[in-house]
Amino acid sequence: MELADKGVVVTGGGNGIGEALCLRFAAEGARVVVSDVDVANARRVAEACGGTAIGANVAREDEVKTLVAQATQALGQVDLFCSNAGVLLGRGFGREGGPFAADADWQVSWDVNVMAHVYAARAVLPQMLERGSGHLLNVVSAAGLLSEMGSAAYSTTKHAALGFAEWLAISYGERGIDVSCVCPQGVNTRMVWEQPGGTEHLETRMLEPQAVAEIVVQGVRERRFLILPHPEVAEYFSRKASDYERWLSGMRRYRKKLYGDNP
Image 1 (cartoon, rainbow, N blue to C red):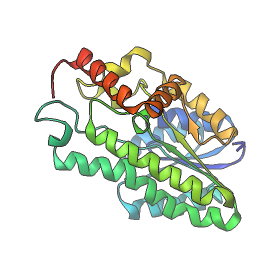
Image 2 (cartoon, rainbow, N blue to C red):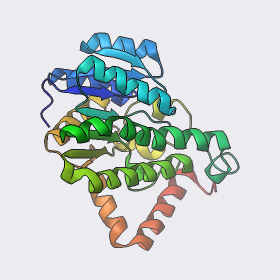
Image 3 (cartoon, rainbow, N blue to C red):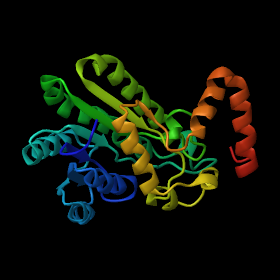
């Protein structure tokens, strides 16, 4: 998809990757709706990119429906919906993280990292299918292809998000709907730094959000399903698929090197 004069919605657009995407899409000539639960940040980014700010909590289906309705009114139609909002909760080891993380962390992770994609598809697909064109751009994570050692809730929900995107691509690809999944590793954003511990494995090759946005624009232009800002993820994923047992063994060794014997 060429983005010039296209109507684009970006959730989680008030900071990090979302903010970089809004600015980059606008630079391509897109008309952008910046959505975020933090309305003040959404307005700041919208002013910077000449877009429209609409507040929304993507964990609530009614708010996603309203977002799509208001964005459609503002843009004429939604050509590309970028479901970018995400959370990284349930970090920790021992009795603090993994399966022992609080139920609330698991539930919010599910609602934001998975159901927000479902709500977006429900709300925006009807207009896209009616005209036979549209693009669903879901920011997932390399954790959806590999794993996230610092948070079981994040890793699990990102796997689910990738699975849902695959289903959308298979089911609607021949009806004019493009689907893309952005799966970066470490990106220099608030999400990575706001909680201590469990991110050391992301720090070796940290990208800036602007670099991710540049790669995303190219991926959207080429209508690619899998967009990998860190190209080495493809190699890791290939190793995982070719010998799962060896991959798990290697991940256990790497985890122990970084975090010791913490369960």
